[in-house]
Length: 367
Image 1 (cartoon, rainbow, N blue to C red):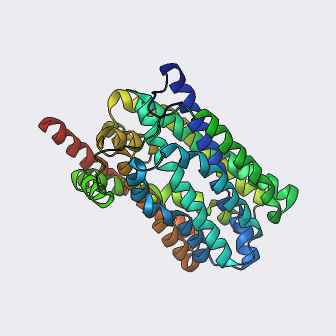
Image 2 (cartoon, rainbow, N blue to C red):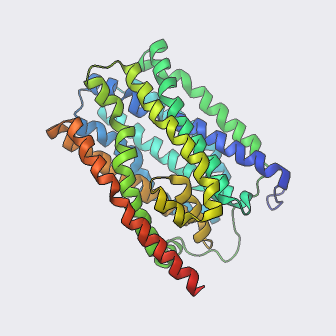
Image 3 (cartoon, one colour):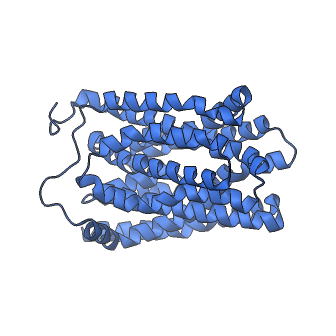
């Protein structure tokens, strides 16, 4: 089918559903690290700081997200989305048989690169298909992501129980199956490539940051506060519980339960942001990703892929720094005290949400 043929309206919902399902399956694999981290700490004799560094290394490639977004006009976005589940599955599942810390770190970086190649272009494709319901589309996309973090710990711990940590490679073929299914679902989606008037990569990134600098500054503050809650809990909750004497299944189940409650919020807030406005929703709930993603896609219409890449960089980088900081505090003060500090810091996003609302209101008045 020609690349420039638009997707039929009736099929748009199917493609959005397929990408959301791909997000679910992709992020199931990327959520394997936290549940097996206690086993890796014991096996490789890691400190909390070095264990947290693995999470940071997995997020490190997100620094390249703006570059990935800038390449959207030169390569086919959907191919990046299609390949990523297979690549992420391979890297994450091989972590279980890592012979040493260096191999574990390299696999984390590889998984991070693959994850960036999925998460940057996927929302852009959704934006093109969602018409006036961008918030609802982002909500469906993020429900897949949140559900993955509920199912991921259960799946990986079940696999470890059956095949041991070294046997996780048996789950790799399912990642390739997901990539094949995405290939079939996205075959009629037109390419994002533009043959004419393509801006320079560096110039387009600088232009996007400059034009929306206050937007990204406010979002960065909100994401930092999110890191003190969601990122720290997601990275260290199983490790904390196993250190307290709980079983690995109990620890993984607790993480799954925490993530399960996030699904309800994602389901509600995405469509609601279409009705009341993203900035008002962020004043109520500054920790919800689909609202921020919808705001990005609605605000930066000239280079949406680059804008989403910048957002991904802020999201993963700030979360990584917080996780690494928490690991260092835990090594000196203990995990309980660390959680207390992080709980207090998680309220820091409210002033940035207020500033964001003021900035957007001023921009609307000018427009």
